[in-house]
Length: 96
Image (cartoon, rainbow, N blue to C red; front, side):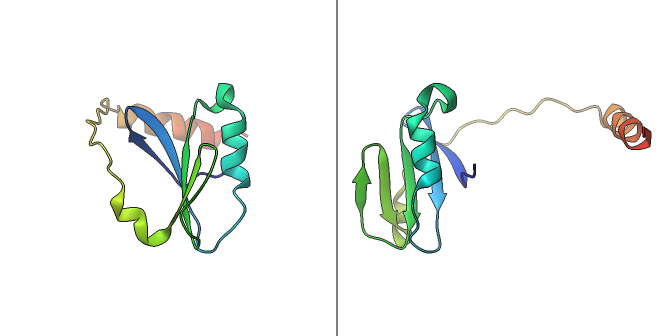
């Protein structure tokens, strides 16, 4: 399964697919068919086609990507103990 980007829009996670050419939306449709598994209600797909909608799948031409109104969100990263991470990587790599 491949989704190109995840963005937050209107308080929910919305996957974005970007296609260079028009293609079937199999991945997007699979995600939308299983909301209990993926916790996604709608998807936006950009590609080489006109504006269209199939249920909760919105299809837009590539040139409309700049029109997305994305919310900025604060990202908090916890401190990483790099020495411990290096030790674990070394342990993993040296085990046969």
